[in-house]
Amino acid sequence: MLQLESAKWSFLLCLGVSILICSIIYLKDKPSYVPKPLHHTLRCHPFPENCNILPPTTPYTRWERTECQELNFNNPLNCSRIQSEHHFIMETLSKEEEDYPLAFIITIHKDLEMFVRLLRAIYAPHNVYCIHIDAKAQEDYRLSVERLVECFPNVFLASVSETVTYGGFSRLKADINCMEDLVRSPVKWRRVINLCGQDFPVQSNLEMVRYMQHEEWRDNNMTPGIKQPENMKYRTHIKHIEVKGDYVASLGQGHKKSPPPHNLEIYFGTAYYSLQRAFVEYVLTSSVAKDLLEWSKDTYSPDEHYWVTLNHVEDAPGSKVNGGWEGNIRAIKWKDQEGIAHQGCNGRYIRDICIYDVEDLHWIIEKNSMFANKFESTSFPEALDCLEQWHRHKVLQQALAPIQLSWQLATEVNISTATVTG
Ligand SMILES: *[C@@H]1O[C@H](CO)[C@@H](O)[C@H](O)[C@H]1NC(C)=O
Ligand SMILES: *[C@@H]1O[C@H](CO)[C@@H](O)[C@H](O)[C@H]1NC(C)=O
Image 1 (cartoon, rainbow, N blue to C red):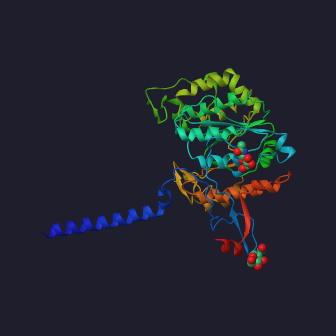
Image 2 (image 1 turned 90 degrees about the vertical axis):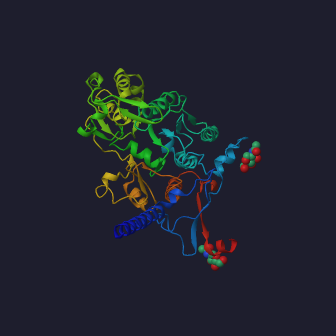
Image 3 (image 1 turned 180 degrees about the vertical axis):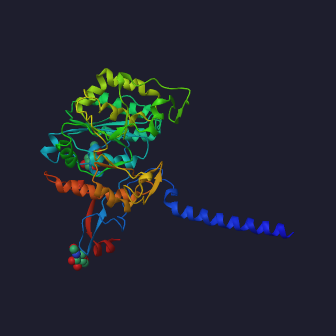
């Protein structure tokens, strides 16, 4: 009887503790459980209190977003309205940028709002943009992106779409598909930079153009990485199989791969790059690059060895045979770098990468990489609001062309007037 009683109490205690823990977890993660609106809207909410990276205002004023338009790219498409309502900068802001056109590859699969905000942050009429939409993306998402893209002559969808698998060859193939399209574009782009839908720029287009032409990088591609470390060798020593759109599985120790073609030494690095046009042509035409691509089909996460391996080949245009991790291409807070490269993630980790919140922005701005990764418009929308305005303000300050009203993402409003009008 006594035993039963104590078992009961232990059970109740356990239950109580579990409820407490669950509540804490629930409350802590609460923002991520807010249901997504069916049709995303670019909300007109104020900037968060802790967004202290914006230029200071007077004591009587504050920054207020001018953005409240709903994302709606229905027919009939009124492009001039879409361009101005979504604050696209439709003019080249300096000769320096015009003389150094950039190409961008953006691979996306969801989050329309994030895509619109990324595109308008990097858009310039003299650049060119190839958008790869995952073949498994939702139909209404694809249609919205297709319509939006119609409004910009220098933005197009990849002519071949892959079903992209995390860690799979398809991810690498998506970039190659875009490259095939980009070399046929009439735009005389000098460099190509690849992005995913959760990147957001830190540098302005002008700053990127200057960075690319800085003597350290003028003659070289940027593919941060090192000789393949021991703990990464399984990726290319054992055969893998991609279950399209789902996962990549190892076939196990019994399925060893043949050594890489042309006696290539395999490197390991980031999937992100900035590549010279001549290098892209080499990737698409040389037998070394094509054979490595073929050989990489059954490896794990080939986008993390392909670019950096080729960029260590002597003959490849702009290669950096002694290159290492240098190249300020991405600000990423990896979980295992906590206490080393950064002091923790204020948002939350997904697959060991931080989804940023507002408090992470100082670190991002300090690093001044070309881009920061990752942002989500649904889990921490305020981080994006804050960084986006900081970035746009900088872009407009650097502009040598007259600024148009529709380019402003925020205006400085008088607080007393604002409270009167509601
Ligand atoms: C498109 O939108 C602009 C600006 O809102 C407007 O002036 C113009 O009349 C519209 N064009 C059409 C064809 O509806
Ligand atoms: C804001 O409005 C108040 C009252 O309408 C006025 O006294 C003040 O001068 C205004 N301040 C600015 C910076 O416009």
